[in-house]
Amino acid sequence: MSDAALALVQRLYHRYSEGSIDEFFAVIDPAFTLTSCGPASLFATAGTWCGAEGLRAYLGRLSENWAIEEHTPLEFIQQGGRIAVRTRVRARNHTTGRRVELEKADFWSVEGGRVRAYQEIFDTASLVEAAADRRSDSPATASTS
Image 1: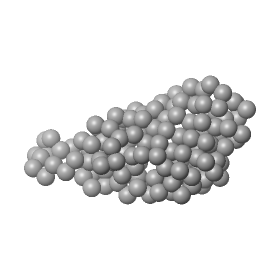
Image 2: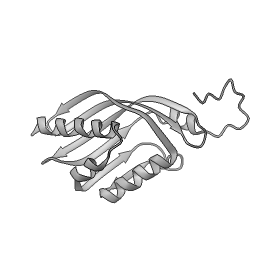
Image 3: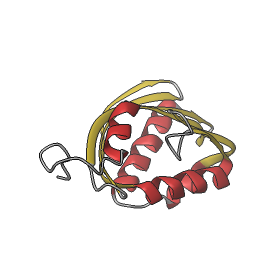
């Protein structure tokens, strides 16, 4: 089972990098939870999202605020159906146009071929900086590249 769990998570990363999330909905458990870090007052995606509807809402809010330009798994660490993934992300904030590049940690729980839980942990300060509305910034301090 553990090899199948790892293969499933790797396949989901591959599909996501191709722009497809359909398979994710096919393999989530009815009791699925997605947890994203950060204060809800600053991040529209922060909190715990439940089931397929929660996943859709999370992905909707993510795409409203950020254009994900790269989402690359760098390392997979597995213990049975629990998988940790070190991931590189590059994204652009839709409001400010600023880009951020960071590494984050994703934690998966897979049981019986179904994804039961996903949690992401990342440096929230870098996202706050990229999303900050700094109208008085000069071009030298407000990079949009």
